[in-house]
Image 1 (spheres, protein in one colour):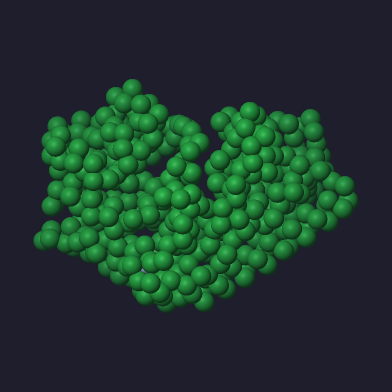
Image 2 (cartoon, helix red, strand yellow):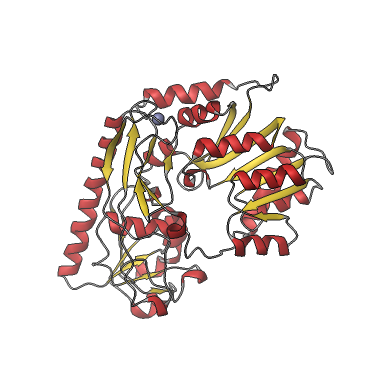
Length: 416
Ligand SMILES: [Zn+2]
């Protein structure tokens, strides 16, 4: 395919009635942080816009960027923090109990298995496991730590590989990759081919209505094609002969959802009433209507104007402005709010980001210790989702007269 193309039908129901909601500013690939030796290279900006399906109400991105572009510089970051390992251990025990998985017999397949951290928690309970992971280097890391991982996109070949070498899975999981799938129906069809007829498929992904309530506009970026509601998810599943029978809301990343599906041919399927209740609520809240989303963007643009005007004011006063945070979301936010020319440099506490430069504008990224020496007058908290720990870190900075601008969920200034 070309570097990018426009879709002309809904990713979920294939309706041709898709209608533009919002046209974002052109933006580089949000996660494409570069090294010093790539500084002389211009990074292209790509279009981004959201559309809604007038038939099923699915909000999605209009442009499809080729995976070669999006994942070109995808580098490995371990997700294995102590907190996450504990979370995986608890969560996998719950699943093993709830769905009666048995040691040395049941097979768990994780699609998009990353470095195998989640599967490892099943392995520790003697459950058979298999990871499927598209990144070659990350699959190698997983295999080295003893988590059996097949390096492939989840396509027909991967299905063939599973069916040839394993029995069908009792449980399949996909964590935080579901919004990145373009051909969703094909993907779910393939899941049904490797899932046992009595098996369960569990997905964790962003839940757009909650993220929207929280003004989490920076969840929109080129990799995330889909902005799901439970109604849309359930219809996608039913198209492939599956049904959502339960869900949990998860209070991370501004609001996520974990939902549970079984094949419709499974006679034991019992749908919890809360599934229909949430779908009803989404409809009442207008989540599938274009106008709701247009109003939302008006709210966001209003916040953008407040933020940009204040930053321009600081600039006129000759103040130095530093952005706190260097991630996919902060890149998207800087381009959406038109801040790239107004920020002097970025700081971030993730060692993987140090000595890198921001996508497109190539702003330098330093450790936040630089703030102690440099004492900039203003910090804009681009990573506003992590406000609590960052503000804790910046106590002395505020005490010493520094100003912090918080852009979202609402424009706010913190100073002594
Ligand atoms: Zn549709």
